[in-house]
Image (cartoon, rainbow, N blue to C red; front, side, top):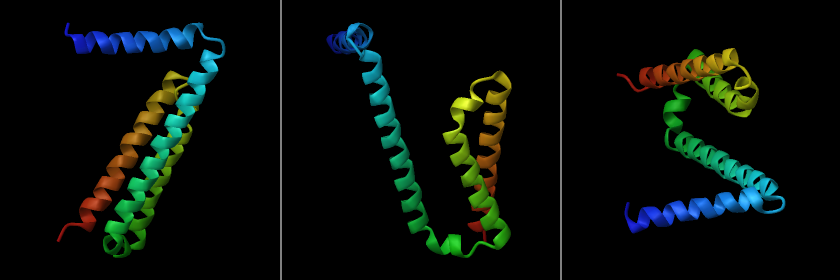
Length: 118
């Protein structure tokens, strides 16, 4: 194991010790996780906005059915993202979450493929 790997392990161990032994370390971790989640969701929103901006003509040329399917798949993905804690509470919920995720991605992909075919 190289020096760099040992340094990384030491950093992780120090952070784990702070969370485990510092007063209110769990609360600090929770706050950090919420902040990281918010940054992640903001990055997703920015990427979707840029994608829509770059493909404005393609989105405008979709028929009503295709637009409904595409935006419906996006809505399902948003609901899956916000309700993941409830879905992961049970095994059946996890299976349903995965099925809805795969289904909505497949629908969006199919609509996009049809929109860009000649």
